[in-house]
Length: 134
Image 1 (cartoon, one colour):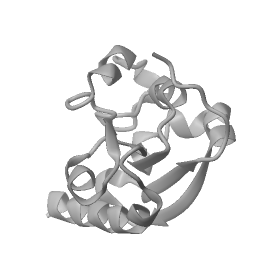
Image 2 (cartoon, one colour):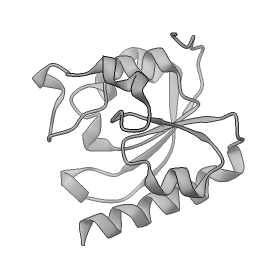
Image 3 (cartoon, rainbow, N blue to C red):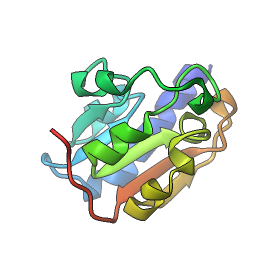
Image 4 (tube, helix red, strand yellow):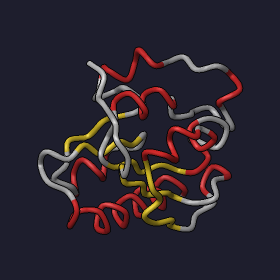
């Protein structure tokens, strides 16, 4: 079952990141359930269900979508989370093509998966200067 497998991947990602996180850390993701439960971080829900700030970044231009969901590049670039966990497919046509993203974030790990046609679950850490927008 894809949903169960996806949750297991997020639990694995949470276990990998938890030693780096504090209660002040901001962790962005689109699938937040396991991450909110298994990490001490504040969660930036890129879908907007738990983080209303995300709603103003949508809708995206259709070119950003590989499937029915994509992370808004401006959301990450303006809100500057300390960490980001995402399926590759959520950023394939948008965020991962942004030069500014690669200047500010480094890939920490890739967990193999083909869920939703993705090339993996990516764990990013902010490495460059970033000013959070109000």
